[in-house]
Length: 336
Length: 247
Image (cartoon, rainbow over all chains, first blue to last red; front, side, top):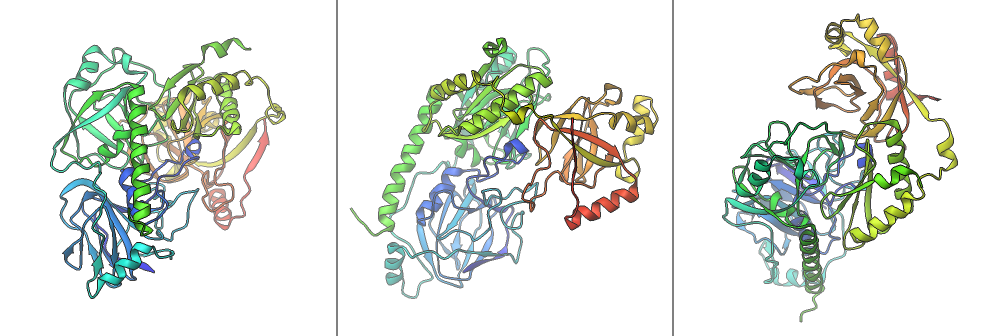
């Protein structure tokens, strides 16, 4: 079973939930940018939530499915079609061998995820299938997909849902159930986003003006934004006095401020350590929101406490738990 | 309990991150505590801990707050700090020195001339100082296997380039500010390239992918261009054995 890449799209790479345990050697985490969408895509085809998916960015690929496959598309809307016919997101879709899955115009968000039942059959490198683009390791030959690549798909036991879709499919090239998961972190039309942050322990070292500006003015996501981080422009944030920084570990969602005063939100491909002062930290529950913000959009930072960030994170995980249980019973053909 | 333990600070790095800071300077003493604590925390295998990352003067740990709360983790940290003075026998052994052969100057070290001019020395004097003693590996980071070294003689310090070079070949040995090191894989960077080593600090297919561990020392040694290519061949054939001694 395999998928052939007819055209690769702008930046399409294999990503799972990331490579942990090797940051102390300088190996970055990598992994999906919108991990909520990534997990959801896997759950919808009955995979483990951390299985590898295809992450597609702004302009998606065109893929020839060389076997009957159960797949799910989540995250940003890149107008997916199968043999020219629009295909819905947020649910499992059974697709006939020989069909072409093509992504088109960007309708919402920034990144879309494609999971297939069984997962992509790609070796793990240091415990993960994620592509570490700069070091050329992991994923599909350590790089983004190119035309002509053939992605092997692992065989997996058929789900009861797939069997019932099969029966109703007839001569159509794809079929899907009527239920779907609606919740996503993709905002449909907005050009402005609220992102909740916790002030960093270095926050008080910034000038009183900068501390105010962080929350009273929007910041624009510039085109120099990628999987490593989003470079923002807006107020120039400055320290009260120059500070000799010692490089230390930086976390997912850290907002660091280089000397030019333009903050950077560190994301999936962030370096393991950084030497710039850190003004704030994006709440874990809002990372997926950030991951779906396109260059040109504006971010308003909203201050919350650590306790609130913990509560939001726990609430999101509880959400995913509930979705998981419901989806699993649907896939197993247990209807309530 | 040692005096400094009272001055250890615990900081927040997002709801998943806890930073245990042992000081605000780069010093071998502080770094040794960092290394020892990181090892203790790692060996403790506390459920919920995702990763432990030692750096110059702090240990950052990422954890799942739904498995272990920050308060519970902080309690374990305090307990472990009480055990930080207990050394295991391996820690009493002299540290490892990894010898790194470098071909200085020429096409492999295009900035050696500049560094010499800037510091008012001859290229050979720069090389002599760069190979004069082993440098402590304080931490690894930035790209896989990249060693952050301390102890380079200040006479050969050169401010970083203002604009990073887009492509620095893997193996490049470089100076940036008062730091030196080498780029294990191709990378962008703003350091001055004074030479190149044929050996690999990151070797994915090997059973030990990383040449260095924090706490090791790295000693640069000058080799000829002929030797550079000979060593490179043996690295590629998989027959190269890194030269290790003990301090």
